[in-house]
Image 1: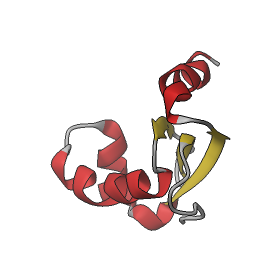
Image 2: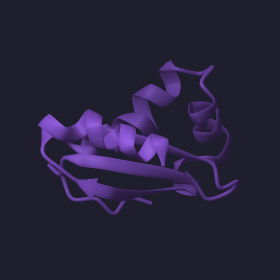
Image 3: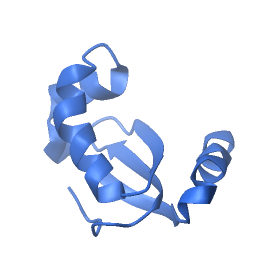
Image 4: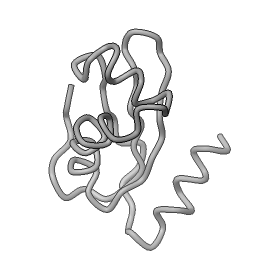
Length: 85
């Protein structure tokens, strides 16, 4: 389930609707990054638990939400904030 407009920079959370597990990341273009997560990366990083779940449950069982929009200069700092939370 994709609900993000193209070109938004910030921190995002992708949640597996089947088991509640989630992934937090940051990107200068969240929509583009989500597309990459659900496509190429899911096929490329087959041993990573996040991508195993995408292949197992299908991308339709994931939702993305923007946790915070921010300037690219603050991305790592704000991503770390959500990891530590």
